[in-house]
Image 1 (cartoon, rainbow, N blue to C red):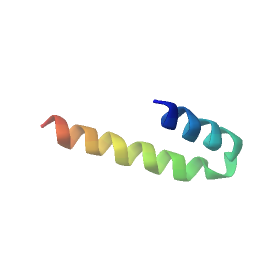
Image 2: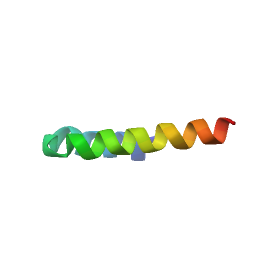
Image 3: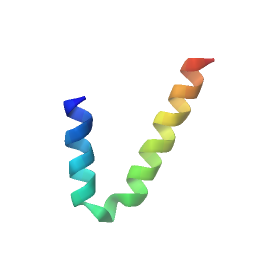
Image 4: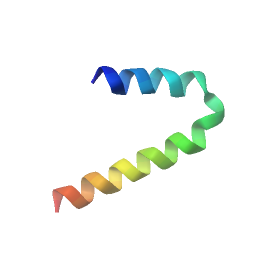
Length: 37
């Protein structure tokens, strides 16, 4: 959990990486859906 908070803070600072963050979120969401099947 601390790692996720750290990454979240880094992403909040680097607003230029919003597109990258969205791509990572989609990737994790897809991974979660595949794992749930």
